[in-house]
Image (cartoon, rainbow over all chains, first blue to last red):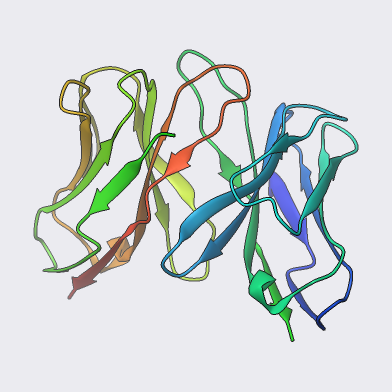
Length: 114
Length: 112
């Protein structure tokens, strides 16, 4: 029973297209994150949230919007997709405390923008 | 902004070898230090973490933290081909709006 799921797993769109990536977690975690992973750049944080209705700007937010509708669901929106957004996208969830901070990742969505 | 750097970028070792991976960070107030492993085509998964100076061992894996030197490491004893993966180190200051700062990764190949 995967605790973080993502959909779709693969997506191809054209330049200028609209894309929504979905993430759901069943860990009861407060924090959720969207990352992109590209060769040579590692994991880069796009947006994150610490609860429903909350949104925090990450390190590479340009061209991306995000929305956290419930504790479980976090969405990443690309409203005018560009080829530079071709990447592998991961969602993760976590909580933070004195002795715990592990992030749990979803399986990833591979996005291609033609 | 915290900087996290890993070395080496890539490593090839024979099966049975001891493997050592390194991570340096810049914020001495950091509180969480972790290694994540990512097999090809898969998601990163936490391998080991530590919150205070010293060493922790779990099976073939040992994590060592020296906050004064702004350095922590992962040691893999008796490396196996199944250990071949991308190893990512991550650092965080635990608090409000917490987020992990990631290194770029070390690609490890263990040859049988």
